[in-house]
Image (cartoon, rainbow, N blue to C red):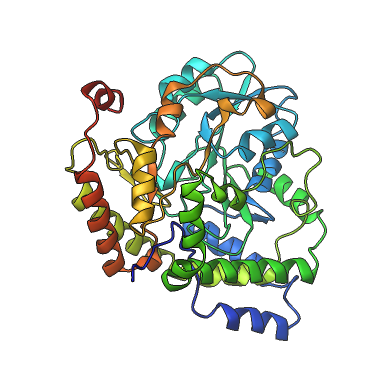
Length: 424
């Protein structure tokens, strides 16, 4: 019988239940000392003085936008290829999102496009280290420094990634991280902010600590949902449950995976779950997770190398490009293939669930951001696919996936020369 592989594999600690039970026994499920311990440990890990936890990474970003005291209506430049929530939080903060194109090789903000997007109204830029790869922070910082544009790094995908030896998040004026279930550090939700100026971080902390504590039911449900996601992503369970549903949906050309993601909509007023504090039990899980982060990242990188070796030489295929001086953490392994949609269908029939677009081309979201100039490289980058390389796969499964995908791609018709050139 074919064993199917899910596109997602949350990083879960073997001792999670024991951590949760200890917090319960001490009466520290919601409030407790692990929050500050986690913030300090995270800051030490990144190489900064301190960090502030928040209910979501996007909310940490919102706190930073307010703490920086940017002028109302100022323009904030973001990559056109990013999660829709990030530019929407710019709008919620009373600022105007402006989109710049990306480099189709790295999927990250193109410094040249960033520079072209600057106007006298520009107040900030948000370089997003997409899929776990650092942006070209040398070029971005040099451009931002001339007109004194604030730099807020989006590190939601990239905890542990480096640029010329320095952790992402340490280049700009501020940065934010996400700890959602699928992120490099999974604390079943939450996020954090850091800032170079202690006064800015103090203003972030004042906002975070003014929020109410979540109730136990909400936190318990969050933990249960995370446990369910882990169970249903296991190959044996996935093969018997979600995989048949995906096969049936494929026959009808349906996209059931859209229900896994938050509905695209205005976020003003913010949902109740955004406006709350980060609970102690999740911080306790984060503390333990930080100790495993290097091992998880090493496993993920090893699986990415297996994919590189198997797929990188195939005609018409473009494996992830890692510029010199960058250390990728492969939150997603993003690959260009001939005839993307056909490849995704064939891969699913052969037991590999492949992601088609993990973020959004925000210039196409007219219901939120209105009519926007096209960003052709972002549109092109959205045609890549993401293969599973997550830590819990293990070497045996990673090699099996690589063999299956290689056979599928080897038999696929090659890209035309024009198409190949457009992707280089």
